[in-house]
Length: 178
Image 1 (tube, rainbow, N blue to C red):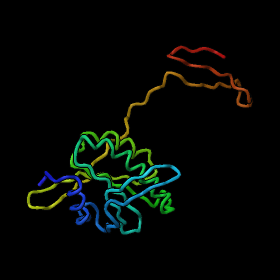
Image 2 (spheres, rainbow, N blue to C red):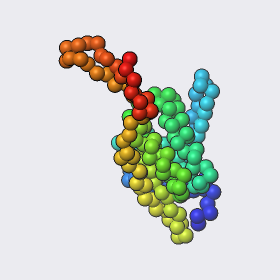
Image 3 (cartoon, rainbow, N blue to C red):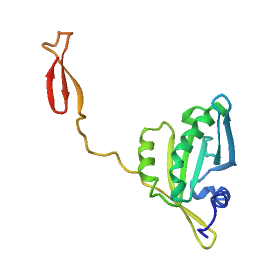
Image 4 (tube, rainbow, N blue to C red):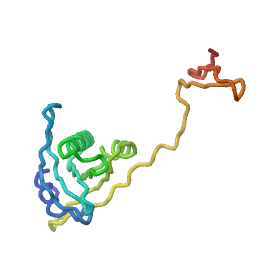
């Protein structure tokens, strides 16, 4: 059953959206978006609404070779959906659903930390008995390592009242006064 083509898997998943999240309602598969002034277009794999009425972009990937496209597509579709439907960014969520997370985990973890939309991730399993299951992917935490970059601006003041800082430039560990 795992030999389904992506469009077959998309149609199968569209019938069973509750496997991802309870309360998802299908709006349309292959929802077309375009913006003539920007000369761009795209098709959301599955567009749904959640139980709170938020728009949910579902981007499906079933192969490692195409998984790298997922972040580009989700970012593009969120922007186009905002423009097409005049939707505030906080009213759009995105789900990346894949059967293989080897190429997705690191970049999706990074994007999810900095993106202004709710981004969730699911690993999809297709079973021989024609059922689906999905498990939320645990994103990587931020790197705990904190380090000083090679160049920093440091401002020193002679007194608390002195408005004119003495600046000190630190470059590659060598300090020079200026």
